[in-house]
Image (cartoon, rainbow, N blue to C red; front, side):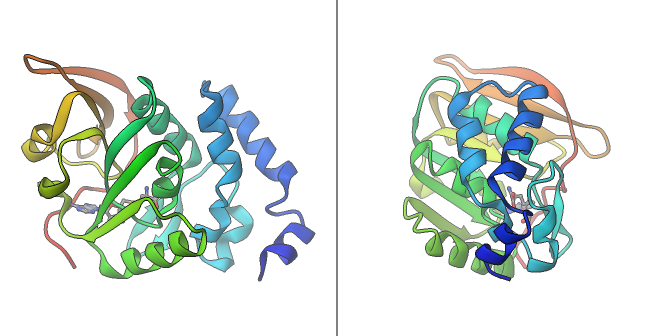
Length: 219
Ligand code: SAH
């Protein structure tokens, strides 16, 4: 099914996308540039064709290997929190998954480094980002517990999977003034914003969330 056909039957039409944007605004997303990014990044290209008709629903959807493409609301919310202080130079994402959040982040950072532990997902994400001509992204197949030391420090780090506790390495790879947006917890998860200050870390609870677990090792 190509984009023309999808558009033809209205599943990915501008109207469908605008409806999603309205929903995100109702849920409190205010950053105009973030809303614009969600409106323009073609989410239907980041999921299987069989699910493409649901691409602009505000819901997580399966992408195989027991993983999901993140809900648009949470992608918008985390991006908004990450860029609150302005555009970013160097961002680290843990959990490339479909590459959807990566594509959104790529609009707000000079460089996005993204780590994924499932090779098959990473390969698909790489092909999608390439076909969309998104070139400021560095994908690495690795366990995100250790971040990406050789590319640190980062002025923003975003995790798309929830660890029981914040991995120490991620905190260490934050630049002073940089922020980490991460869901934490096993059954009940809370989204945190951790800001590195001159003297330590400031931790703010944002809201309750539901993410896939942050795992160890690669597959
Ligand atoms: N933002 C992605 C979300 C994918 S789901 C999207 O919208 O498509 C979370 C992803 O994190 C999964 O692909 C999972 O394999 C990955 N993940 C979980 N633990 C990880 C780890 N320790 N290192 C790297 N990736 C991890």
